[in-house]
Length: 290
Image 1 (tube, rainbow, N blue to C red):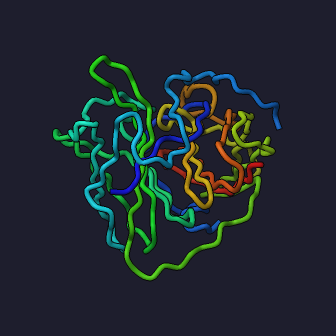
Image 2: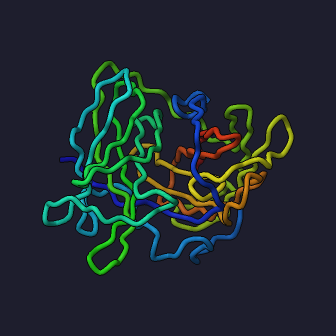
C-alpha cells in the first residue's frame, strides 16, 4: 500500500458554494496555458481546524487512506474507490462537513497536469467512490481531504494520499514558467503579492476580470467565492488556500484575498476554481516561492 498523506499548508480566504456545470478548458489541466509576513491564524478558519504537514506522509493521527486499486485504465471515465481506516483496520464513517462537503478528492499527474477536484459519494460500509474523468497514462498522486470525528466528537482535519498508475506510453509536459496572470474561459486572473517566502504567511491577491472589465458575478462555490489548491513541483506536496471573507450572493469579485502559506521553496502549480453563471472555471498558473 502506498503512503498516506497528511495535509499541507493552509490559509484562509473568501467564500463560495457548489456548482452545476464544470468548464474543463483550463490552462493547467494539460499545462496549456508583498505583504508583510504573519504567523497569526486568519479570519474564517480556526487554527485547530487546519490540516498540518505537507501532505506527503502515509498515515497520520491513526488514520490511513486505503485505495481499492493502485491503477486505473487510461482513456475513459472511471470510478475510483477508497476507504479511510483507523488503527483497528475498520473503515471510518464519521466525518464533519468541510466547505459543505464531507470528502474532497484530488488527483494530479507527476508533471502537475490532469488536475481534478471531486466530491465522492459514500456507501454504508465507509467506501467512498469518486467519478474520475478520463486520464492520460502516467503516475498520479490521489488525495483525500476531510475532517474525521472520533468517539468523543473531536475533529481531526487531514489530507491523506497515495500514488496510482495509469498504464500506457507517457509524455511528460514541461511545467510552464512562473507568471502573475492567466486566462480561462474568457476570464483573466491577475496575482499581486507574489513575493512569497516558504513557511511564512503572506497576503496573496487575485483579481478577476473579463474583457478588461472587473468581474463581479462570482457565485458561491463550496461556501466561498474561490477555491485554491497548490501542488509543489517534484514531490507533489499539497496546500489548500482559502480566500478571506464569506460568500453572500452571486456578486463576488473582482478581488479575492488569500492568506497564503506554502511549506517549502520552489515552484508550485496553483489551481484556482471559481463559478459564474452556474459553470465552474479552473485556472492554473505557476508560482515560485523563495
